[in-house]
Length: 273
Figure 1 (cartoon, rainbow, N blue to C red):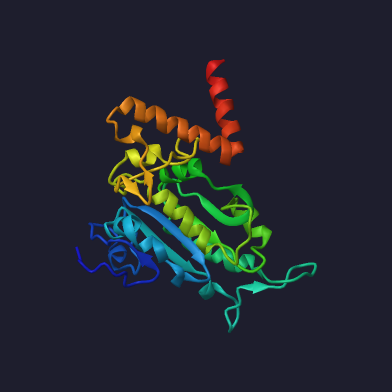
Figure 2 (figure 1 turned 90 degrees about the horizontal axis):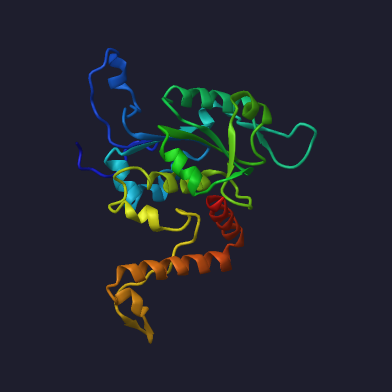
């Protein structure tokens, strides 16, 4: 395996492996798909935005180690005419431009060549279901995901209907494109893959893993600028520490996210029934 950690091909990232195949062309492919790696495909007009921060820290190490693989599919080569147009004016009038269904459809077909097993097709859209930790866990349990990044005024509705594309939103706001949202979703999912985090307990104790916000964290020095670490955390009494952390999580959730707290109370009530 090469020790060079710099991705050479902006359209495909991850460790390549040679394996026996009855189709020699697979070994000569420009973008070979790793058989056991979790695969993230991103259909985008700005492929050079990737891997971005996904190539750093733990997600970057996992990418280089072949735990997961990233493939970008550039929309522009599928454009129409001499200028490779990918968009057109909205039917019925209005501001902005809309990505053409014939162009997006070709890119989706290209992505389908690499799809295997369970690989949801998702369009990053402010009108979609809100992305959360539960969805990240579901995606981590799949074989990968294909993310369609919108631009301008979005994508022609017909291509979404034709392929049954699920719409997912990062939050109640609008961005210039889906690339940042795609990176956030991939990051939240990849860190849940086996072997990415050194301590599996980290994903069990953090915010949203159990429906509550995470408790406050502290480390050395014991006294900083007159602020001391809560005594219970240095007491060595693990039972008391666990009780304190639970109480802090509940208090923070109740104060900052009343919606999560209401859902938590509903779950607790259902367990008693």
